[in-house]
Image (cartoon, rainbow, N blue to C red; front, side):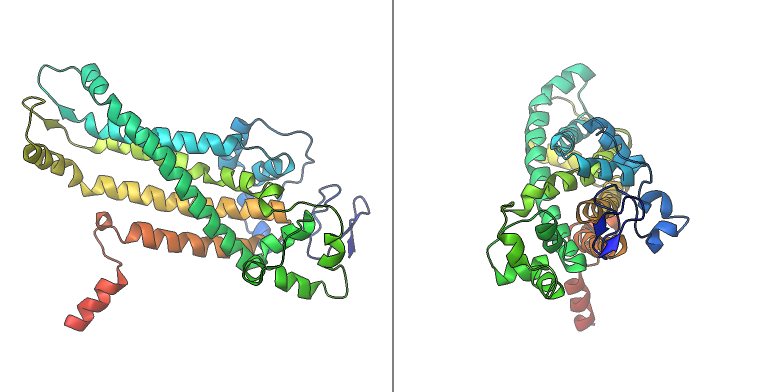
Length: 332
């Protein structure tokens, strides 16, 4: 155990911030690097009251270390709901940005917008479902990376007194088994489980904290909407009554603007990398643990997602499909 030099409260040796007064007990190397310090340095000022969710979203962009400390102090679900709703809304606006380039003589811009409004609603609903499922998958993968890096769920089960039934697979993934071995001879989980506590990790508010880390996707989707609105070419139709083949040929001119779609993929890749950084800060705050280990694990997860969901697409004009590459070597 280590004693806080500010308030005298005893803390574990692996703790970076005093749980009682918030005084920083240890400074990591990543906090001392001139380039990375503005992002990863733990806030020195004392925390008094939570910011409204919209201010938390803004600070998650320009002052993420402070934002996630604030969110961890008083967790709420509004930020995650706003992010999912906005991403769904922007997905619907993507459809408007594409179809608004289809022009018919004698039809005004307002009339074309009203005509494709039902399609906007379809893509809006699709976006709500898509981003909900995507964020759930990303959260699972980032949690998995954090568990292998610092055994985050095992730490949370002790810090928040989470009472869970024994499960060898779950204990291995969460780091619970390793923590039990580390605590042998000190404080055992059996003594903690005798007390009344939470029953699930999600009750610690971990999911609410993670939800704010997806704010980069709002920025990326907004930029994608603007690129689609400005960068796509116009398509001129003689009338609304066109054959399916003619419409497909005309729409192909939009899909063939590769640099526009490549920009959208780049925005998504950068959003994932940015999210990995914010996830590291979120996990650091709730677990009071090592930033560098979390960052390495989350960046690995982000690169895996980027490779499997973005780099295998044809829009970037290069093919990173390992199977195709090996097939080409064999044929040669």
